[in-house]
Amino acid sequence: MKIGLDAMGGDYAPNAVIEGAFDALGQMSSGDRIVLIGDNGRIREKLASLDADASLFDIVPTSQVIEMSDHPAKAFSQKRDSSIAVGYGMLKKGLINGFASAGNTGAMMVGASYTVNVIPGVFRPALAALIPNINGKSSIILDVGINPDSKPDVLLQYGILGSVYAKHVLGVKEPTVGLLNIGKEKAKGSAAVKAAYELLSESSDVTFRGNVEGHNLFTDEMADVIVCDGFVGNVVLKMAEKLYVVARSKGIKDSFFDRLNFEVVGGTPVLGINENVVVGHGISNRMAIMNMLLRTRDVVQADLAGKIREAFGA
Amino acid sequence: MKIGLDAMGGDYAPNAVIEGAFDALGQMSSGDRIVLIGDNGRIREKLASLDADASLFDIVPTSQVIEMSDHPAKAFSQKRDSSIAVGYGMLKKGLINGFASAGNTGAMMVGASYTVNVIPGVFRPALAALIPNINGKSSIILDVGINPDSKPDVLLQYGILGSVYAKHVLGVKEPTVGLLNIGKEKAKGSAAVKAAYELLSESSDVTFRGNVEGHNLFTDEMADVIVCDGFVGNVVLKMAEKLYVVARSKGIKDSFFDRLNFEVVGGTPVLGINENVVVGHGISNRMAIMNMLLRTRDVVQADLAGKIREAFGA
Image (tube, rainbow over all chains, first blue to last red; front, side):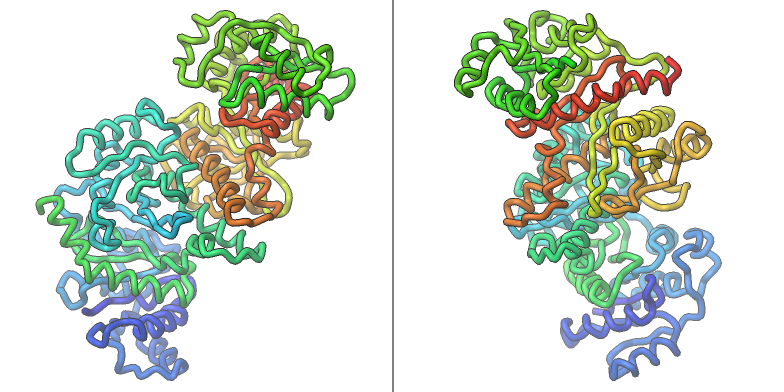
């Protein structure tokens, strides 16, 4: 397996990215390789400073960088020799089996649509994050930021996308799906969520369990997959991550709060596109990059994108 | 001051309600009275079991109860001798200065619209909760559940309602307003939130500080008032409350997490109606009821409803 890594992506790139790649490689099978895509000089310099054998990695030199502040579509189109554009090009040609980046998420989404394409039948690709519960399990929540104003049929598809992810990557045999809502009753919620409740109830593609409220999160009352609008999901995710920081600042050392740490999760797969792509936080440090790469490995191993294509009959 | 209390409202009514009222009375000025509205026999029985002098309270007997599961509008119209309907009647007649209930929130909102009425110019009454930050301060967040699908002009009004609350009840001199969103930039978010950003920026009625993200919560990066759709606010609030339960279950004893406990907050005022009304959680226990009553006292003392009427020129 070859995993492409955007060596220039993220606030601490390329240094933290190379460090994370170095750590990840130590945990991967000998047949797996990481392809570092980025500034050749800086990559080699950093590898040398780590006393890492550069030949353990493939290095693909690029001359441009899509900055976090760049306009996604414009930057992707104009910076053809950026690490993100080159990475997607390699993915499309089959030179790498998966692609991971902590860079400009918007540009990563644009790249997905422009090169490897959305799976036919999928209305909107989505980002899925993990929410831990106090009993050690985790649930998938999606969308967490790509699609505010998700329509009811899009919310239904999140249920399908999340179920495939839960089944094939997390190993949940029959994933249940819950709809994030503000009450138990089906008549609760926004217009889109009420309509989504109907669609989820009637669908034979998901095992729908009904509504999940804010206070059901972090417990076994969560379903395996929690479906929500990208606006709500993004707020929930960032709030949960912040609580880890708060707990740590309070000197609280607890396995549950530790699992709210985004660095442990590392990255979230882009669900609904034809190839396996994982995106990480812009603030990813060494540990976050390592875990993003290990998550990418799991996603590629399960061929999550292929499984989603199957689910959509594509 | 006379505060009306729905003695039949909440999962543990009337017992926990009477207990909470007994505790609250001990913390109120000698001139303040609590009017217990509900089943006369059960109220007196409970007061006796507490060795409480029944003459310390006013008791207004009612014969009906609006259950948590009742249809709000139907129940309010049909159960004219329910504690909620009688309470609103007394409020309208000026027999009490404020009204508090942990009962059916929907019926409380219906009662507000049918009897004391929405303040002219206010599009939608809202519920405002408190979110603590790690430095000991609290911010107001609204709406937290009454209005999913809040329109941009409604979101702007939340900013005004919350600012009046912050100023006159919490004593914040120049309250800042933030818009809960999924990014820092003004172009981020749902269609309604993007339009609300414009309205808030242009308004001279609020001190707008820009977007607040999920990870800004619990810190000084929050504004004094956080404006959001009732759907998002409800999820955030219930999630925060749950984290207190999680922390407690983990044996974590910490002042910040303790302040996420809804029992400490007690209740949230209904903002935008002509009288001072506070609603509590259905699961309110003795401590929650006590704090709901103390909050009602503060709201009445500040005449929050009157101050809001002034802000709207009503």
